[in-house]
Length: 304
Image (cartoon, rainbow, N blue to C red; front, side, top):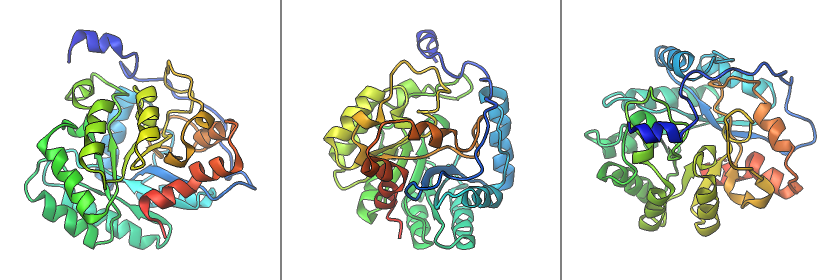
């Protein structure tokens, strides 16, 4: 990691303070059905390791709930559908994670859309993903910061080509933030809006979502969704007034048919509905609000 890059990023240099805000008991009445398009699930041992990392380098987890419990929590609080994500942090575990995800979806029929994962560049990548799709998983989730792959690499091209061929969406953390010294690689070197645009041009049939509104490059990603119909963004943690953002995010001035509501639940340091409350403060038309809350996710993930 280069010293000037560390200075450039004010985020995640050490643990951030949690917010003790009041949580609501239920999704507000009278609004459109809410799909949380960014919820994390893992087998118990991996979840505990992830939370340990956050406690040391990120923030305190407010809801340390295991996978089935966290899904029940969201559904009980009025979330109509959950999109479940996970990522393989090393080669050789993706197949087991995908089987775990498929089993979780079977436990909540019609309520959970599960995404497959892969460690980019690992052997038999195509077979692993096709097996996951055959089990009913709806697309692929990758994380450049954790998995340390370059968005402009043969490994990434392989995943994009498979997803395009199979008609499956790809969710990839391709924004440069939040950057942390605890990562084993420098995300500023691995991902950028320019590298994402190259993939959008090279794979015109691929639907891609970049979470966190492309955190770190908001303006660039705002322009990309205005240019490419195959790109979506999600709001996850970007509109909660938690990170020290330099950009003023105004969802009503963005392409609202390409933005999805997401939270990062349960790996959050504030109330489960903080993101939702902040979203409701934006002066959106009823159609735009409905799109962001659920309709866009239904279209992107092919939720039936």
